Image (cartoon, rainbow, N blue to C red; front, side):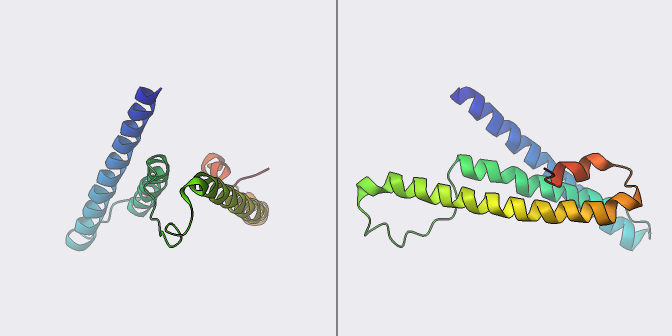
Length: 136
């Protein structure tokens, strides 16, 4: 099982690295084309935005899996070692509840926006919007 996790982590790192390289190349081609040839890269901004999302949101699982979050240990000296595991459980539950609440509130806003703004415009590609709109 650990070999599968290691392989999936390496695969995700590779995807992130490729997305970062594509973002750098697209930015360079867009800037050079825009300023030297007066012909920017068509769809360059969208390519950069999508690859930025892949880099940022692809890194979250890796950071969580490796437990490499930024931690401030203000209370670690005062909390007994036997409480550390329970403290971690409580922090994870509070974080999950906060993210769940945020998801419900933000999902309602996105659903309302989809019904009032995007639907009448006859959006030609509903899959990307649907996949991030958190519809219930």
